[in-house]
Image (cartoon, rainbow, N blue to C red):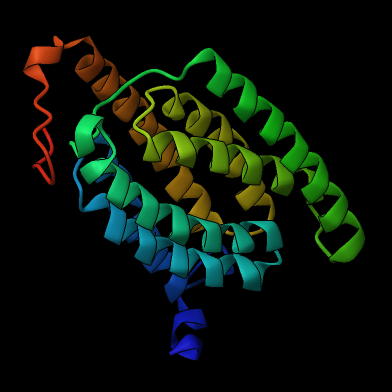
Length: 217
């Protein structure tokens, strides 16, 4: 199975594209589109996506990104639970803003994680891009935390990460993945506008019944 996934699906500009990268493209686009629309199915599809990306990044030498996917699986399971039961009185979670203390904790954690990963990748691996790999890893974890808690500002963090990811993947020869993150960038703008619109709705218009509830359209 691993040999089939890492095998070449097609070639673009003399650069082979693996089946894992192709499937990662498809599941990634679907995942972010569902996330932008607050659909619960984004979580299982997102977990499948990160498993594919784990394989892809490891074979490309992006070790921090590969390791990050393991964390994403755990965060995906947590986010799935939080969207269903993480609101008041175990109700459905609704879109909210990031608090000042949260921002301070996120910023501090992001800087610390970037420094630790940068040193680790630079000294303990053969990574050719230790700093951008570390920065995008930290930004992605910050954004995923916000996504799990439905913080509207998580989209801004994803946009910042995507603006680094796109040239990074082009440099590493992952052209289809770079194209995927260009699509992600557009979907992030869509998601930001969609969540901001939901945030502006009166609280009474955003139901939060106990237990699982269908997402708003």
